[in-house]
Image (cartoon, rainbow, N blue to C red; front, side):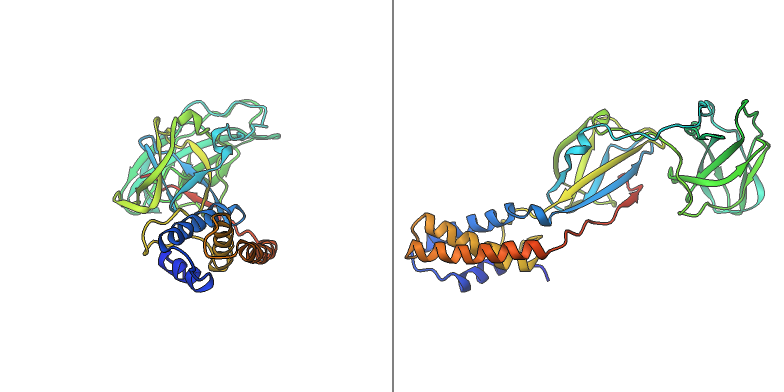
Length: 315
C-alpha cells in the first residue's frame, strides 16, 4: 500500500527523534520529503502513447499526477518512410452499404494503400460510411497505376474508431466487400506522426479531466491549440513522478522501500546543516549510512517502464 504524507511523517519521527525546536523540526521534515521526491529520477515511470486524431479533439488526458512530457515530444517524431517508389492514393475510396455482413451498426472509416515490389505507400484520405446491424461495406473498384501490384484495404477496429487496421488485400483493384472487423493485431497503416509542436500544445500541464469529461486530479491534460486531423497520429512519450504532498492524506507516488531510506537520509542531512537536534557529526554519520543504503537500493532496482499503449481516448 502506498504511503501517505502522514505515514511518512510518523515514520521519520520514529526513526529520527526530535531533540530540538518542534517548528524547526517540522520544517526540516517537509524539506526532507521534498528533497527525497526530487531525488527519485531513477524510479520515475515512462509511457508512450500513439494517439489517433478524430478531427475535433483539443485535449488528451494522461493518467498520473504531475505528468512530465519527455523532451523528445518537443521535436519532430521520425515519420514512416514510403519505400514503395510510388505516391499513395490521392482520393478516398468510394463506399456503399449492403446486406450480408457481420458488422455492427455504426460509423466506419476506410482507407486504401498501394503496394509495389519495393513496399507500401501512405494511405489514401479516409472515407466514412454508417451501417445498420449485419451489413457489409462494398468498396468500389479502382484503377491501379502502373507498377502497383496490389491494394491494401484498411477498416476501423470497431464502430466510430479512427484507428484503422489492414483487413484485406487485392491484387486487382476490383470491388471488394469488407464483411468483418480486422483483428487488433493487424497492421496499422504507414502514416506520418505529427510533432507536438505542430499542434501547439500547452506544455504547462495541469490536473485535468477523465474520459468521462469530469475533473479528475489523478489525470493530467495536454491542451492542443490545433486538433489533429482525422486519422493523424501523434506519439506522446511522458514520465510521471510523485509530487510534493500538501495534506496528511495525500498519497506519495514513490515506492515505500525508497521512502523509508531517502526521507530519513535527507532529514539527517538537513538537521546537521541547520544544527538542529543535537550533534551535527552524528547526523552526518547517519546520513552517510542511509546514503549507502539508498545507493544499494537504486543499484538493485530495475526501472519498470509503463506498458506502451495505443489509445484513442481523445476527450
